[in-house]
Length: 112
Image 1 (tube, rainbow, N blue to C red):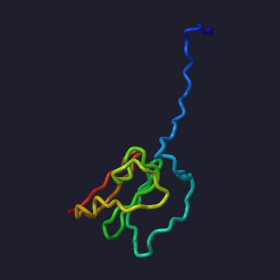
Image 2: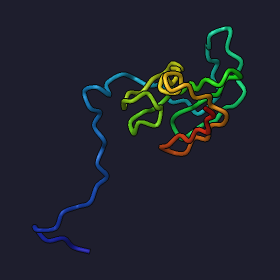
Image 3: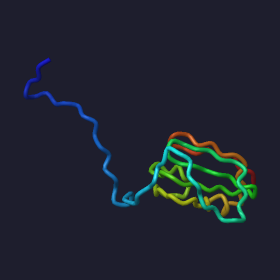
Image 4: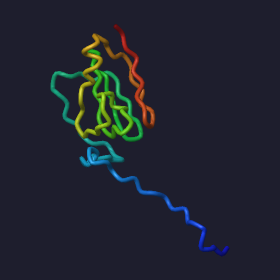
């Protein structure tokens, strides 16, 4: 198959990280130990393609990993290697019961 000067070759575009996305996030395909505050008891865990969420016995939600689409629930698109509590649920007096992570989403069942 020949190409003429007007043809353009389709090549995958490499996604360039934005300035605020410059923090290195470790995405590992194998289990890794994680330090959580000692008083937390984990009752539920869910893993997305690049992020993880846990629900504690006390009804708190912690998330970490890739956050480009806001799937970590912290009100921004920041990524994090360390678990962060989702403060919105605490502020609204909501208790997390279940969590399910999709590829780029996080679904949480809460009780008031």
